[in-house]
Image (cartoon, rainbow, N blue to C red):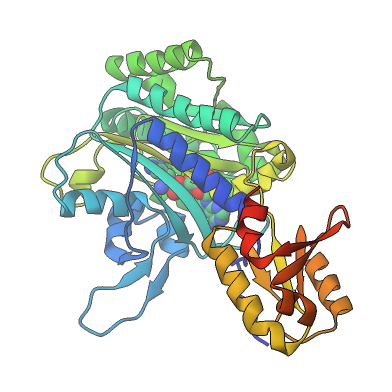
Length: 416
Ligand code: HAM
């Protein structure tokens, strides 16, 4: 027996999954986004240049694929943002701002646990080519409305932070470095490596001892230039005016390298350690980093569909999930009625009615049991008498009532 690959999942019932994706598509359409699709395989080098050489996603979590010798190395996409920007550049998209979404599986070689998989699903949204901080407020409000109004979630918190412009970031890294020099003997060995390679990431070290030490760490928002400071204040004011509740989290730095200015995460305690179910931020230089001639300031986020599904477990009964259609199951009593059963099934199916046929030659008792298990509302019994008289016996599986109906009147009967 084969088993599924570690960190992957089988979805045997996609009702809730499809509901989330469909609702997200409808919601995004209201905000004038359109859907695109990009490949699952992309050049490995692209993620090194965008997601970041020193990020965990690139150094530890890439699924790379061996291809023919002279081809560039390729990988399974760990996230969609670089692919979207590559598609923007490669297809010479002229529409600015470009408001698009894309969704599908992403791959990261992580240590699997609840809410953390090696193949997971993101619903990814981007606005490429918009500089205004007001766009950030508008975008975050759109997400908050989706979770609150469309998915009826209320057990979450929005964390925000502001990483400033590249100049702010560069000077802050110096300030942080000096702070870390003062406590270098006390921080964990991983933070010592991060200090050298990707210093901002020390701030979201999960080690409680380090977290305690970093309580007094300098805040990037206390070290912003005048322009960034004004934008940071505007963002908070506008979110408040738009009735978005948020908490400022000075240690929120995000694990991907391309962010500048606004960053945010929607988190829920109900998810345990893997608490973020949607995250993103502003990235202003990715277009030029990936070879585009003119930079496009952009903002985006990705909802983790798998984690959102976990969150919905407790509220799903209140959601307007699509109803299963009423099922009619046809039971030919003898082999001689099989063809007639197929013809009747075809007529009902053509008329748009959900219909199935039992063709295995079981006894009537066992077929009735099967129809019941299948969730049939009607069992349609055809024996030699019905065949001769051009009728069927319809049994209502809910009320138990039976009636004989002419085969020619069946569609009308069910439509009624
Ligand atoms: P990210 O924070 O790496 O951001 O991922 C976004 C979301 O994807 C997470 O908050 C989480 O819900 C989900 N996720 C990530 N890794 C896993 C995993 N191993 N298992 C299950 N769910 C996971 C990005 O990917 C950025 N591209 C978001 C973005 C778009 N920023 C700007 N535009």
